[in-house]
Image (cartoon, rainbow, N blue to C red; front, side, top):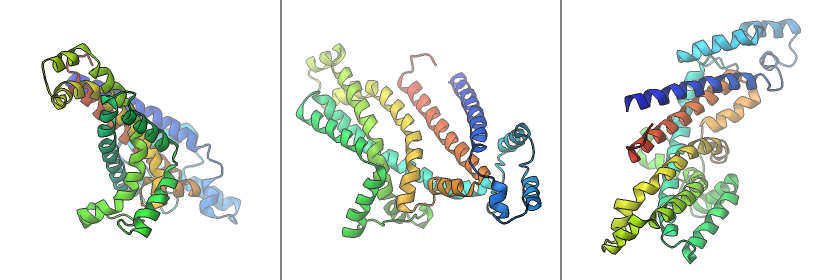
Length: 313
């Protein structure tokens, strides 16, 4: 297991390096000059040049990347060009909001996909299977912002069950924390449940059609026992893989959902950062998102190792 973990961590390090190079390079392609944005539209050339020198923007690209990467390894992602606040502090304020939303949405996706995928697999091609397939197709075609607005209209305005906007940290109480995350998590979780539902349905239907399952039925085992002891674990391998891949989709969807529900997370921060051309913060957001996705994939690899202990790493 140790060798397996070291191998995966080495792969994660390579991914982070490649992402850092791509992120730094793409940030240079953003139209406009941050120095002009900071100095002001009416600043003189000398003032703009002074700002560029202060920020290190007058140095060669390779030198700027090496300095940034060396500092990032130590946890220093630079300072914001907008308010001179350390990027790590900004991310520390915003990242918990996005992580809370992502985890809550993933819980919603699991709670929806496991029962629906299981029910659809019990009778492939049946009426319930067709209804669930139609429902997942509808969920895919529904834009997140539109669904979020509908939920606000129904469950925050017409029937004020949950708050429409805002965020409360866990320290303010579990009730307030869960109430403010309910609608955003449901908005994200419904879309995130589609692919896991389909994957579980397909995998479980294949497992239930195998010889050893038919043998278990012939022995008189209850359907619940067959599912719990024999079928679910084998069908869980592709399901867990898809759940891990959904992490990146959830982080991307958080940009829209956080804007709709007024959550102060990485999504709304990214929107403001692009407008301000705050490159250090933008780079920090991408690196933080990459770390989350890599960590999720590592967890999936470990879960896959646990589910299939006899297979090679």
